[in-house]
Image (cartoon, rainbow, N blue to C red; front, side, top):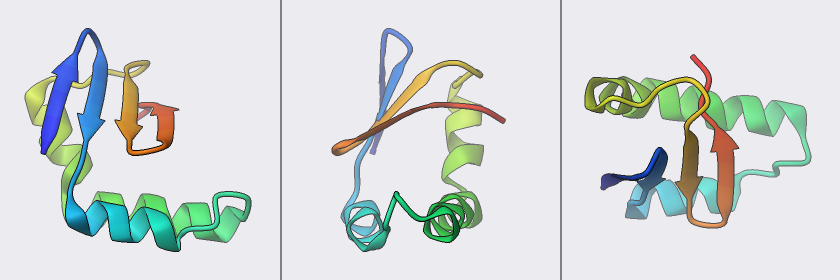
Length: 69
């Protein structure tokens, strides 16, 4: 699910939780894998269709980052 609260986009899903748990965010290649999986899933495309903009905060479970195209 994708929900927006005051420019904070909360993204949740069983598949996403599994992917996040498998990523070592301290490792560059692992982070690039995570980005690739999200892009290939169409998640960012869907968020853009819903109105996400550069600089908005994206929250996925215990992970938060600033959205950048």
